[in-house]
Amino acid sequence: AAIEMGIRHSRGELIFTTDGDCVVPPTWVKAMASYFSPSIGMVAGCTEFSRTEERSLFHKLQSLEFLGIVTAEAGAIGAGFPATCSGSNLAYRREAFEQAGGFGKGKRLVSGDDDILMQTIHKKTPWKVVFATAPETFVQAQPPANIGSFLHQRARWASKCAHYPQRWLVALLGAIFLYFCLMLFALPLSLCHFSQFPAPLICFSLKAAAELTVVWTGSILFHRLDLLPLFPLAEIFHIPY
Image (cartoon, rainbow, N blue to C red; front, side, top):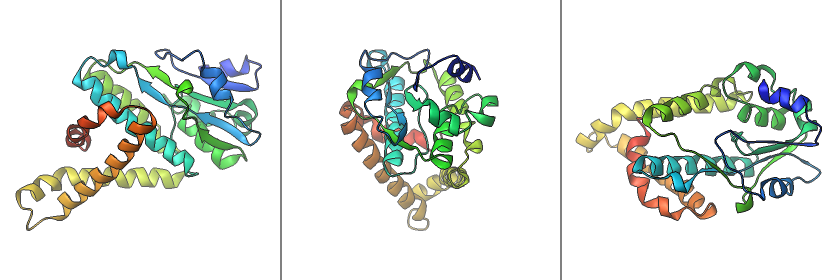
């Protein structure tokens, strides 16, 4: 609601949003604006955790996990199925925002000014969504300092998923959650009795291979190859997390 009030009191053709704990480069506005062609209504950008704040293994694992999220976000947008983005690095046309009905019911949510708006623009308007990959558009955020604040942040992000306008995406996320729940209990059994229950370990291996492909691609695209050695450790924690 606060962002929408700000938009109502602004006059520009393009709206840019970031977060209070973020640092944008001097080139941010110009570089993001360069992605707007006549058919583009929204440009999503990369947000990364500040490398100067990566003082612990916990912070580096967060950076790796967030790298995977951003890479999946960019891939989905590039494939024509925009599913998620971050309001910490986002730009859209005022006209696209108004045609989508603003934030609509999302104003009562604690999160959703990014994902839900993007999906609504894609679903209900003729405007296209693109992802900005130029380093000049990268925004840096502060990683949560401890596990409590980390889980609180992720719970806030997840709270909007049930309100996505694309119901197939809600169903897909629900199926993935069920898959992880089954894996959480079945994987230990497979590790102990692989000859009798090989399927869970095979499924976990396929999951890890697919995610490594995504993270590897992202580490090259966003210049974070230094995070790749942490991938095996991150995979161990990923399902219970």
